[in-house]
Image 1 (cartoon, rainbow, N blue to C red):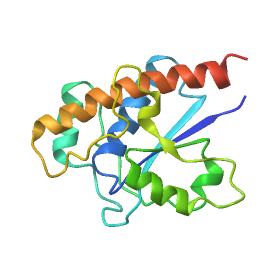
Image 2: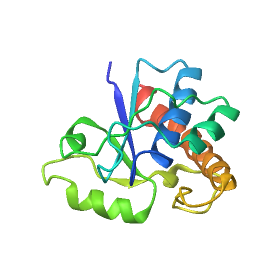
Image 3: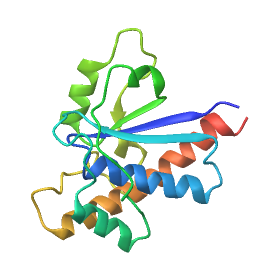
Image 4: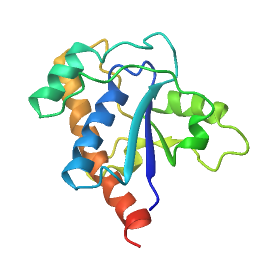
Length: 161
């Protein structure tokens, strides 16, 4: 059985990408697919390596039933493009960084996570770090939408055979 591997990327790996990791993991577990889909997150910078997600992100996620407390930040590395089937950026700036980091022999191409959203027309998840709590709620709305679309895509492409 093939295990589909998904990596979510933002800049620091303390707000958006761990939120996406927690939300997507919740949906994968709820669907009974934990043994078939591996999920991780990382940042394009190393400033928050080893740190827990932002407390505001954790609180917003907990209010919706997502636990991020066990997650720790890490920086994306070249080997991730060989390990993961999906490398999903939260915004175009991080996508551009990932495209520069992608090894030429990698079959994985980075893309925007919100390409999988079904109800949001935006294609970038805004960074809520410098804003108020409503920004974290908006991020959750977008991430929940895209997580459902991504799970549907993975089921159809990889798990329906």
